[in-house]
Image 1 (cartoon, rainbow over the protein chains, first blue to last red):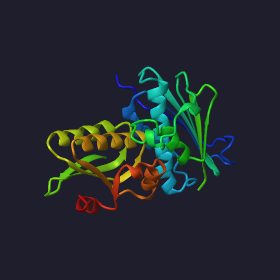
Image 2 (tube, each protein chain N blue to C red):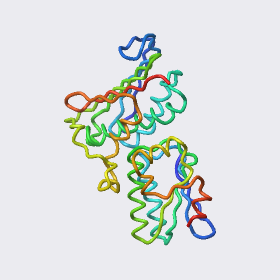
Image 3 (cartoon, rainbow over the protein chains, first blue to last red):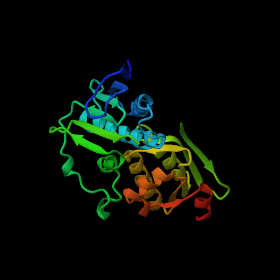
Length: 156
Length: 111
């Protein structure tokens, strides 16, 4: 049986860090299958369409950032293990959208990734994810183990 | 959503990316371009006019394809990037690796 996306929507809730009057919070469970990333991104983005982010940031920044963190969690965290889920928590408030993504992996050290814009790395196929992510959102924070990342996109 | 391939009268292949180019569909693009390369095509234009977003895996597959096409004496050009996608290529410095045209027609004319 193919694992499926599962989504739970809570509203209204109050979540710290996204401003008063949180309008929507969503929990999404994503099976560790790269083929589901596009659908998971569209599903999550639909619930973030509350007007707090501009249509352009919703279309590009949020979607690209979500695709990045989901792919990392599936590939490097859960190692494509179909029995493991990636857990996504999204909170949309009046001041920001906050996205928490956690996997069951051993984590990693984000400071150990080489600069992909250095000449010797430019033609490498991989290694740009974190660099791109940091330019797409206003805040990127990993937990100490490195298997949970929190992204914040401020309103606008 | 997906990829469309069209051949121009001079033999170049224009690949349209409809929707997104991400980790979940990059292999499909790779295979289509490699099949065309195998079939003798040497000039490629990847058209992003209808593309919403590209993740780092998508960027990676373009780098890899460009290299393979160059190794066969060909060239892969990009076209139709919106402002956000153009910025993505600039900040990753991949704009120095690819010839980027405003439109597919301009990319074809420059071959």
